[in-house]
Length: 132
Image 1 (cartoon, rainbow, N blue to C red):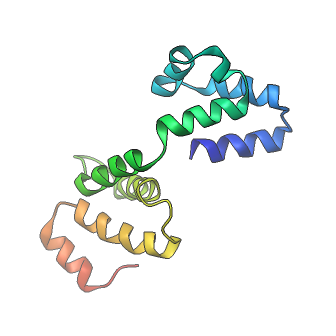
Image 2 (cartoon, rainbow, N blue to C red; image 1 turned 120 degrees about the vertical axis):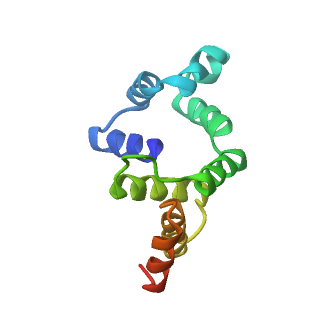
């Protein structure tokens, strides 16, 4: 999600590679920002190298596995709105199943959403109505 947003900004603002590198480095926070300190300076000298480093560190099957587990365990929190729960389920579905077609993710998201309500009676009633 971050990378797609970054690419849209880059394209819209017509950033050169040096601009992209500066903005990317400035946007990295938390664990992603730590990459700048942990890495050899030559590995973060170009956008291409920094992107490759970030992808090696933060993408791949380990991240997908992590998101699948979060999705399985996701429950509605006390006071959490249904809209917020829905949005989080959608986010996790995309991260957990990047290669799945959109329609397949929609079906799965619906099932995970109903399960996350943590109310078996309501879940049964919802499933009987075949929600989309």
